[in-house]
Image 1: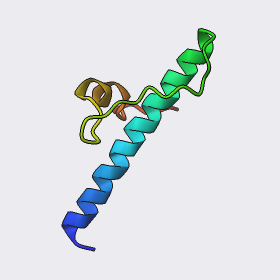
Image 2 (image 1 turned 135 degrees about the vertical axis):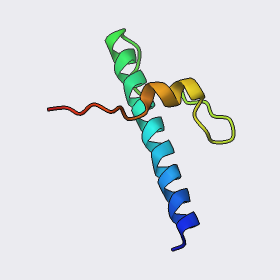
Image 3 (image 1 turned 135 degrees about the horizontal axis):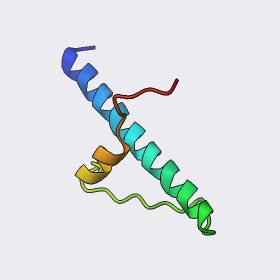
Image 4 (image 1 turned 90 degrees about the vertical axis):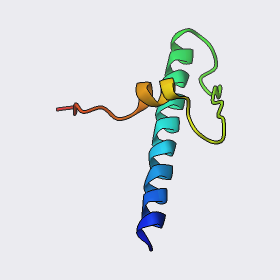
Length: 65
């Protein structure tokens, strides 16, 4: 696998992790307020999360202990 293919795979995995984290948090919030937890609130433009969502749901520098 070329370096370009590896980079593409890593970016796709990162995008999916952000998307899954965002959907998980939205479902938890829905359940807390009494809405169905399986609602999907994902909207994408060209397959990319919005810049705000990427910042909010991206991995952080801190770790759980």
